[in-house]
Image 1: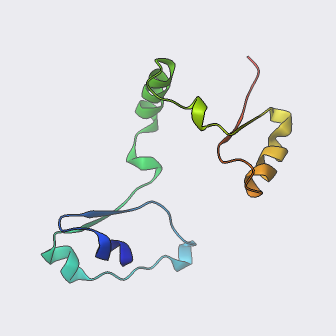
Image 2: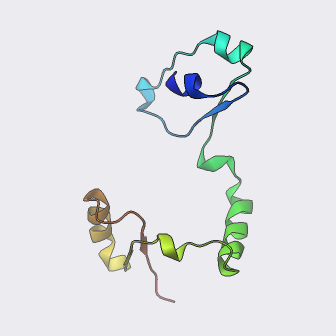
Length: 102
């Protein structure tokens, strides 16, 4: 309801995450939806088609158009995967990745 109140006229609220399945009921003001032409949408994975998006994103990365390396906070080997999960839980890394040998 708060998100809908904050959306402007003709605005869209996009639901990207959910509480546990049995706790995700929401109340909305139907007047706001109709009279202010607001919209509520759900999305999963950014509403993209992974078969199209992943090759395009990889191409952009290889061409230097998509900066990813700067976002990586820690690198792990496969043997360090448990440490990576623990570091994530402890807040020691934000974007840790597992590197596989060539």
